[in-house]
Amino acid sequence: ARTPRGAPPWRALGIGAAVIALVALAAFALTRLPSRSADATSTAAPAGVPGNTAGVADAAPVPNLGTAAVSATPAAAPSEAGTEFAGAYDESATPLPAVPPAEEDPAALRTALATTVVDPVPVLLALANADLAAQRYTQPAGRNALERYELAAKLAERRRATRELERARQGIAAVASGYIELAEKRYGEGNEREFLELLGRADQIAARVPEGAAPAQRVRERRARLRDAAIEAGSAAAAKWDQGAAIAAYERALTFDAGSKEAQRGLADARRIGRPGFVFRDAATAPEMIVVPGGKLAVARTETTVADFRRYWQARGARARGNRPACRDRESFFRGGGKSRSFESPGYPQSARHPVVCVAWADADDYARWLSRETGKRYRLPSASEWTGFARGAGGAADCRANVADSRYRGKFDAREAYGCDDRHAEAAPVASYDASPAGLHDLAGNVREWLGDCAQGCREHAAIGSAWFSAKDRPEVAQRVALGNDVAANTVGFRVVREID
Image 1 (cartoon, helix red, strand yellow):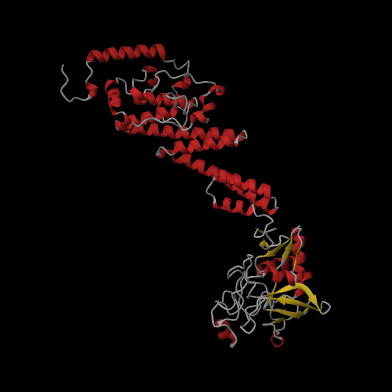
Image 2 (cartoon, helix red, strand yellow; image 1 turned 45 degrees about the horizontal axis):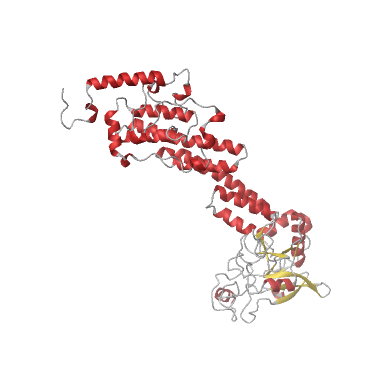
């Protein structure tokens, strides 16, 4: 019978030709393909990958597919020592072998489809499954799981064979998962370089198909866990001022996640350990400190807060609860307030983040001694020369960039000398509510005065330095000082500590 003009290429073959082809294919399969008992791994579908038509790989060879041809004879699965994977991640295997898109040679594809008696897609899936089981993921060229799955996917897509297309794509995702397992093996052997290379390959392959979302997520989560562990190690090393270990840990974190902002900041801070501008905290109970120019002194970035002082107060117990001096309102002898004011009730609203006030010099000094015992480092109150040194450049009172007597203060206390601007607070403000000084310190101007370690009058008095929330324009200087007796506390006076650097 004659084939009508325009008939599909599948009908172009005559019956005789089809019979001849079938005989030839069967003979070829019998002589070349290994039996199931001889090489079970060459035809069995690996776990997690959809199965293929039973016996397809034993029944027929791979047809001639032109320039994209695949070997008709699957090689026996090599031993673990001899798998192709040993070279799958070396320079010769980068980039991964690519399967040319069908559109690059449509004539060859049409010829393959027209002259193929046996559907090649199930055969390719069977061979790819065998390659996957034998860990022939991307090598050798022309006889590996990735190329065969991708070729099967292209053919299935052209034929709109949805089921086979899904199986092929799942196979590609399984190749990505295989690389993840091998990466973990290298990690267990201590070979982090190859571990990262293999994870990268898994990620690259997983991105080729929608079904690769799960292995891609595994790669991201694995990288994130390792990144976080390295960042934690870097933070611990930085807390001990171990610069070398901190830098190494943060650099390692960046090998797992090059875009990690936390690791980048940690690395930058680690490179400044012990240098001016380095920020650290000796313990959870200690304030945040910063190294100031000169390199021998670190200063608390803020005044001691109510929360900081409360921890000390509770830890010290009865020993810290002797005869407390009366807390004066705005340092006035006539506004003593008796025992009604305390550091927890200074006469105005406050939060845990407000600077602690209504503490006598002895309270501040004892807090620094307690902190020294807690951390094993030497904390103390600053001297006058130290305070004026690290306070250089602090300002902002005139334009209310510091908490001083402003329009709100004037409205509440009828203060004619108050500034006309608005700093948003009539009394003390939470620490760090305003810009830091050039040295990285907050509230050197305004908020509260700060006790110094220096003493006068045979140490019957101590000095408090700095302006405060009630400081008006008749006293604009930042480093103004007042001497107060040891039995005096005020709701305008607090303190900050310094730490000596070994």
